[in-house]
Length: 171
Image (tube, rainbow, N blue to C red; front, side, top):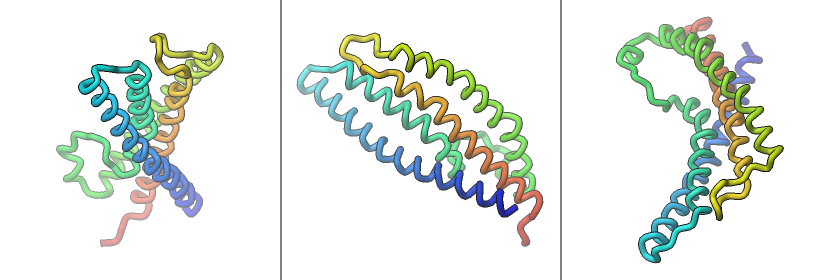
């Protein structure tokens, strides 16, 4: 169990650091959007590059922040029953959910997105809009990275659930 705890610690540490970095990108996004709004409404001017930058930053935050959100158990869920469950039943629900849904779903998205990203790099994909971001392939690379981080956090949750099931906390 020591190795699993060590692995869980590494995964949690990675997603914690990524989440802290993403929080700074969130702040930068607020600044970019504010500048865009000021330019649009005060100076009647807007740039495609800035609008695309907003979309790319949001995608970056969403993709890389998913593992961090899972780490802190902040994903939206309908938990009409879950909160009423004992820690042992919650561990079963989490373990089954991770093994049947989260890991296979992330694996599917990673495996489908990698060829898409490779193609984007090979052709040097750029924005189709004049004045847009010249390197669209860069943001596409964060799709498999983000889902890998989320899948790793699912492994951490599975380890924690397994630990709860094998070594229930003393009351």
